[in-house]
Image (cartoon, rainbow, N blue to C red; front, side):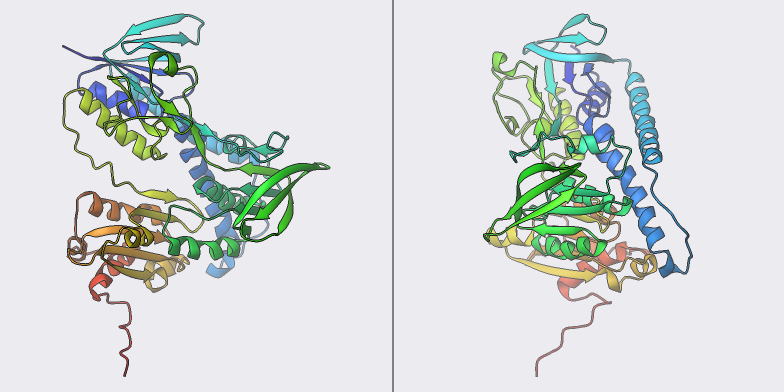
Length: 469
């Protein structure tokens, strides 16, 4: 008997789940009250990476003399920036809409879903009518939204979230960024190049990254021109004429500072969206971090699943998509073949950061024997030809079996290069699977190759350690 499955939310988790379910023969009802593509496509990954490209071009203009190019005056047109971003987003949204409509067994409902029981969803449609659907399973994929801190003054005009910033046409003269996570660092790095003077207030930089990478990134941010204050927390935001003043206190010393900006971006993370889903009434357990699920992403109500940002797990679009495929395959009686434990993390600062697997600190904490190897981009021909010789590739491998345990990259196109590390780890490969593979020259991938060779002291472009007499 054909199953009918309701998917609430058409972001990167929901629409991918819907398509995979349709491929497996299910009748899928996909419900969305905003745009398809969710936060990632409309207010997150894609808009920020569109801005990132503008920031790269601005950076290249500033550095033109290094490449023997004379460039006259230039500035960022905020309105044109918005228009380009909207064009990219609209193109992708339209493409996903067409993709969904190409599956005859997906019914798209433009409205808000409300779960009545484990087999019934009521949908309040945009035209004002209500439609009730009977289903075999429900997949909650409602995503997340920006969270505000408890800092005094966050309700003042000019204190904004990432959603607000992406809708602004003007480039703030001075932008204060509160938060040293992925969102905060990306916007700080991007807007510094777009023309803002950025002031960064952060308790720490990329808390989940390998500490060596975080430590190396900090001076790069400052070299870019960002005024960065670390180990500090924002205490209060007040109005100072038409400006905003932020009072911040260091965590480890009895000292406060005040900074002033035109806008203050609160980048303190994201929280789950499940308002109106009726979770309490039907008995789905949750907390302020999201819906509670088991290892199969099933909620406390059998037959109802939760995927992506809403389920207390990793808040990454590609993880949400993988979970969507996994859940649909389970529902349809298949055995999913994806390693959900291994996923790359990517940070689009002007010097890119990417990592997958264990950090060195985690390996030490877990007392896992390992070897570490590093290769500097300054010794890579392609990196130097790009004018991007700063950065490092760091490989962590098992001391005995030489299996790849972690990869950490700071440098040019790190977010593309990390795929090789993720591939190795997801398939339990050792370093020899990489070192026996010829890597093209001249490419950035050679830095990854050399770092891997270094696990057994076989790297060609690293001088051997001096022997003590």
